[in-house]
Image (cartoon, rainbow, N blue to C red; front, side):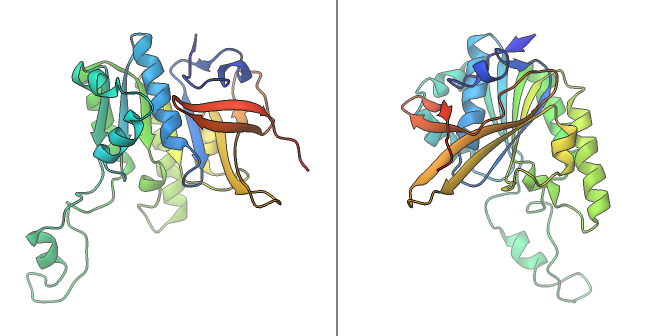
Length: 251
């Protein structure tokens, strides 16, 4: 079954919509529109009776809601009616007394700079277990996880990191949700484990052209089980969010 993405001009590129209960990777540089895309996707689900959750691992929930409400004032009502959830799973934003003490001295009077539980980076396992609980409690059918980059670098061993991320995505497939994983990858040809493990890969370009103008564009790199457009297409930010436009011609 295909579901509407909520992004004007996008569904026509993927045979009418995304395949339900699959995992999609949405990558791009800062400012390329990843958060906006994700929230539009969740709001589209509420119209179809699908509760959605935005899992924030780095950005402030309050900031995201404030910014996205400019595109859709109904977000506040959707939250109140428990159709849309914004869940903060990132480290504590505030410094506290325990942080200061633990970063200065240990019980045996040696200086240390280790992380406390309040400011440790979220791990794939801890994020998954919390997401699983929220999905079961609230009947969530659409997920946005912002961002995969926040839990990617939780080990100094690259091989362990790759296995951990691959396992995380595989476990997400057991939740019965359609999931968009946001990522700060800036090169579409990076070929990371998350690109292979996800059912689809969408890349948001954000670059300066030869004339010195900023160009925003969307490109679908992969879409399993779907005939899809591969061209780089312009995107713009309207009063209602992201719109996908025409093919960008190289000059």
